[in-house]
Length: 219
Image 1 (cartoon, rainbow, N blue to C red):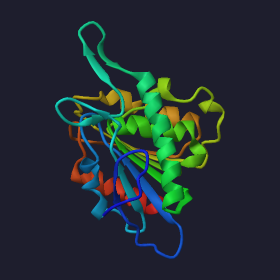
Image 2: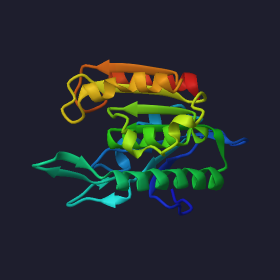
Image 3: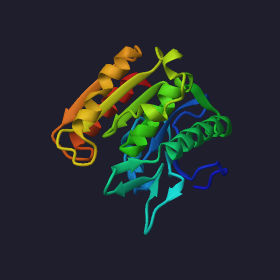
Image 4: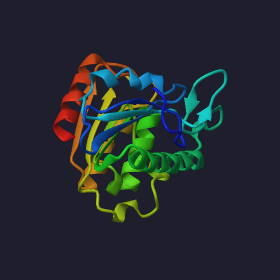
């Protein structure tokens, strides 16, 4: 279906709610993927949600997209472009504001769902701007403190809820990086559900049903 143009490219699944402002779910894919990846979840998720699956702004060769560059450098190992990540954080916030306006969404009921790099950005948006987000589903990612706004710790995060999960044999993002998240979030007084699954860098069926049930309880 065709949409009014917003600042980022996206796929949309309409909400079943017609008479009032709908709650919304914004999905952010991983490095090297695109907006079609997580959109495969959309048909299985609560029908009252208006779902946006957003394409990251930076194209990769030969295909795929990224929220920020990851350089595979022999000396530094994997190196993330944090400045580019901050730019993407702000692009996501601007996109959410536009979507809320254009689609008349319930701005008090916004959920972010990320996978991998998309999770890193979802954390960055929610922890930097907690007043804009109600729930985060953080799949196979971690919190990068370097891309949060400077005064994030002074903000009120008590309205946030977070579901985080990780594969126990994730070969892309180390499990111990994700295991730091619950303590970090607890220090900000954010209620957090953290789960591990016996998979690699991906979302198992068990993981999907787990976050889906959590989402149904929190929207």
